[in-house]
Length: 463
Image (cartoon, rainbow, N blue to C red; front, side, top):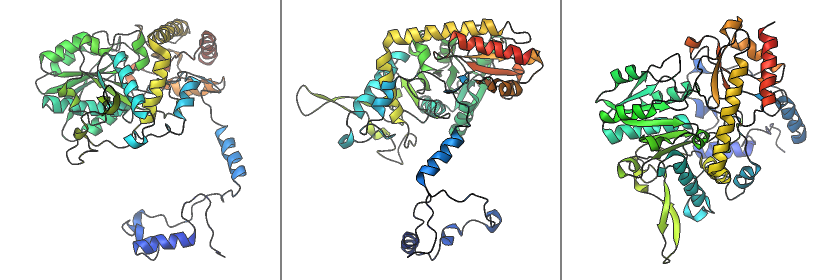
């Protein structure tokens, strides 16, 4: 009988299995795997970890007790947004994507299709309807990844190596885009107007040139403002041969015009609002939509699904479009490397969009606009609280607490005692707006929830 302890949580810790693995590698101990790590970087002490809980039932109780300490959107009123939103997820979405034949992040192959190809085709088709385009890819990792990929697509199409981005884009998306574009593509930031949060057209005009491959804007942008000059920005960019990428929160397109309608070349965004749970900040998947022209389709690095004829006359199937352009077909010739992404969320989005339909999206958008307008009006009546961007906002909007003499961090901490999760602290990312927080209002926030927030903030800020 083996006397060496076998850890219940660490795979392959059983001595006989470890020996077989080491023998296969030609090593006497696991030390041979780590020999390249310098001694100065190694930890030689013993980690202060508790002993493992051997009972699976006791372990489950222990973990659930730890999780119960969390404040989350199910036991609090949640006003957090800025990239992941607390939208309602219909039960049927979970029911379908949790089916055994669907539940995988992989797209899959024809022999294991089980309807996934059709779901992704339908998802892409409905995203095209929302955005005003014809072609749409299988999901990227998230919105940030979609921006970065679209930027590289634009540089290949135009032969240029500069991307202009509005400073009001999400800070996380900005970092990913800059990192993904290194070292051969420069990312230049364009200023915005502090009074309304929209792009500074004069600064854009100065920075637009024949070096510019694309201009990236968001509407609504990260601060919640709608980019009213979007058609004008498209016209300015096209005059100099540059393309335009527009980032969107897709549920807003039930009430806002799709970017394809005002001449944009790409639309990118986040799938999470389309039936994905927040899942501790996860549940993300991005999309890219373009016109169905070869100059755009040929530059997609990701998979595209379309209808194709089968060997049976009159019958159609779902297949991959222009497969040879991808890294799956040829690693060394692929447009960009694309690995395992978020196909499951693309399929979930298909279920959500089919359930909603055009009327559902319109009602959703109108309801959110009404709730945001009500929240802005009530919050602005609190002494010391100001709404810096008074224009129309969708979901996200800024609330400035500078006049209260309190910082966002302390206000959010106090709000937790009322079982309210406050807005995202933007005092670091956007210091021009002082002690401001980004609040989010979705269809799950009721009038009484907003009233409760206002009452709690009055107690906190006016004491």
